[in-house]
Length: 174
Image (tube, rainbow, N blue to C red; front, side, top):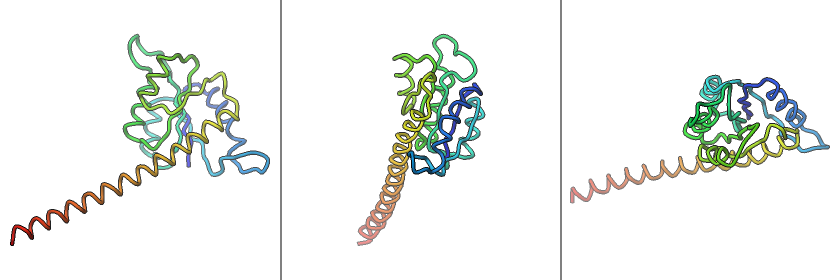
């Protein structure tokens, strides 16, 4: 299972990695996230490539809201566009927004676009990152189970439609 960091600032990527790395190996003295791997990207385009290639393995994505440049007035930041992309194409991946200066309007827009949670860059300590990932992993497993049930239900409906069509054919022969 993988955690994707989408952050244009290498210092913040390093802080995220440093905050979570102690939790990646199993230890008796603290909770952990064993068998998790970190994948890092610095922009929307690179992230979309990683998502295309590795989406089945990615459970959680930390998405920087701004990504390289401030948006034009009235336009969504690239991070919001990426959230929408993740929600539409990879609904089992659970995005967490990274923001340095969020407000209610921005947070509301991010929730509409598919954000599961927010993390203020000023509060990126290891324990906070760990707890957010644990919550996001729980959500990922719920989404994966729901997807599996929905797929099974669709297959069952198709089988029933096929049987109904055969029964109609038999009834028409009588």
